[in-house]
Image (cartoon, rainbow, N blue to C red; front, side):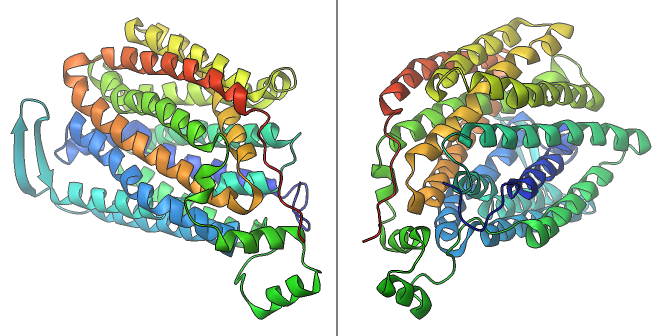
Length: 440
């Protein structure tokens, strides 16, 4: 059921927010590993920097999700985006600090690296972004707010298209800036500008998805309830204010689906921690090569998450798409483990097919299990699960790369196959979509 007062095109600004947000994030991907090394870090430190964001998001996402159920999605999205802007300002400051050593570290497992002043500031910047990083969770709750059962999978797919389009533009823009200047300052300043533009779009163009926000115990809301004239969504929101924070996890299938998300994201983050280092050391790729790889991958994802997912979602159920996508992803990781040269680029087709039909379906399925008054809270817990998987995956992936190298991708493949077996159980929850209670 779409919230009253929200137009059918209300998701267009949200798609734009997703696209620009991905653009700002991905513009630094091609050179981040090189920048960390320049600041004194190594593969382990790169994984640790990556894990800092989800570590703080683990704390912040559930709180922001719960706030969005009470305050409204738009306000919380704006708070989150301003946090991202502040983090990029700190990141830019780090570029101008002298690379002065704080301490040198040399350990058999972690390798040799130097903790420097700018490296420490980068950690602080990622922490600030993570603490306010509930944008994905709140955006998913927004999509659920304005989607019907028939349009839910399509809308989540379009969110994926917007994100993937941004992931194309980011590395491509980084490559262009790399040609203009070899300095790492330009991409960081570009990311900072992109974050500011996104905040403006949220403030100016994004309507509130909930018809009843603000103080749910105010005299005005209470009066409407007493008179029986409140909109049902206001009644659900008022109920949400009284729901214990653990209650959303008791809804049928929610805990299982969150556990499945953890396993899937663990496999992804093992890959994300290892691949940039693998590309730089084993494949001898440059910044431009890494940018090209991620651009090709994101371009294929746009095709799969757009027209392909739109077609297959009409013929197959969400749980079937999840299982099929996980199997394809598992095969991709096993192929990547032994791929060489252009075979690495070819393997991106498997990644795009698997992830493109699987991940939007997982997000859509979870949103269907959450009741209206707890949508933001459940998505906040999903953000925490994502953060925990990122922490574990990035730390383990960075730490074991030294000994396993490409074998890390094989580990990701095994986890994906295990996840596919678990996902079959989603079938038993496919009919458990809750219906909001009727107001008395």
